[in-house]
Length: 396
Ligand code: DHB
Image (cartoon, rainbow, N blue to C red; front, side, top):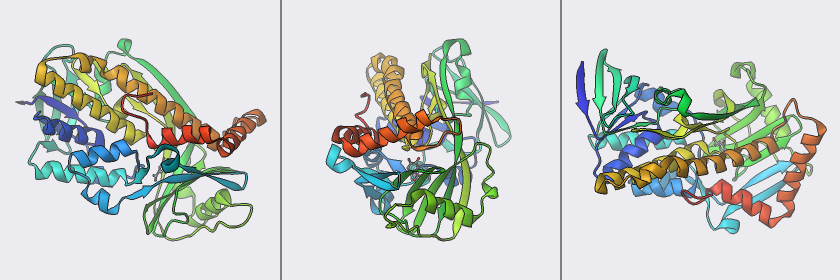
């Protein structure tokens, strides 16, 4: 078995792990990124596409924002639609900040290209078998690469390998408190070669459930509809999807027209919230989906992962520079405050806009009342806008 050494072993080459490797390099800290999937898989997975301003800033800071600044779409507001009418939430006016539409898939491609261009270690199809000795000052990652079992020794291991990754399992179950909510519906998502029907996103509570109109570019529409759990994406014909979207976005004054086009991708996403606390055990630190997931409504998942690794990079930088552990000790608590804020916001957006098959008329009236409050109250609209565009790092 061959053994190597680095300062920070990063398990997972999604946006969290890759971004961390860049933030550490900027601080003169070496890392090795191990990604279980092949490069092609990492670069083609369709995920969300809304970046908080803080996420945009950090991509610029590490020099990975060239394509985003050319092709990304800044959005100053979005629309909530219910009862046949729409309410615009003007983030720019209410909070002085906006968000950027730029797909996670594109960020991942740019972070990979930059890492490889720098000649820094990033291994694909490197399957992590175990993270060991995290309770000592010499943690190790055992992994298989090109058929050979290897060992990576490090000062610190960061688990950024997603909800189904192996890193979280290295924390003894008795040391973790988990919080979970599984929602009784899923999203059927599509990509279509047609210009978006609206220049801003529309989140709709339709008669038969939620729908979201988003986009990937001026010529590519991204849209989602609420479907029952266990739905097979191929059971929905293209026409049935467009008809359902048209119904859920319909305005009473007839002023909305849905643009239809060829659908190029269909997939179903489950809706779940999960938090594991603390996000640290000894020399193992968890970041992103490895530690917490949110339902997609409001697009907080990627932004939370980015916030985690910003905190971690700063804390590791401080530790290597001065042996001061204060920020590392504070990491989990600071990160979890943001995680819970986003969990609450995602829950609010999800329950307010979806039709729970088990809901009663009381639940229905509460959801509608909240939507009407957002419509009539500047302060409620501001609260939604602040959460949507992202709160200060470590805040809330
Ligand atoms: C997208 C996904 C979301 O969950 C969201 O709230 C907004 C946009 C998207 O994929 O474009």
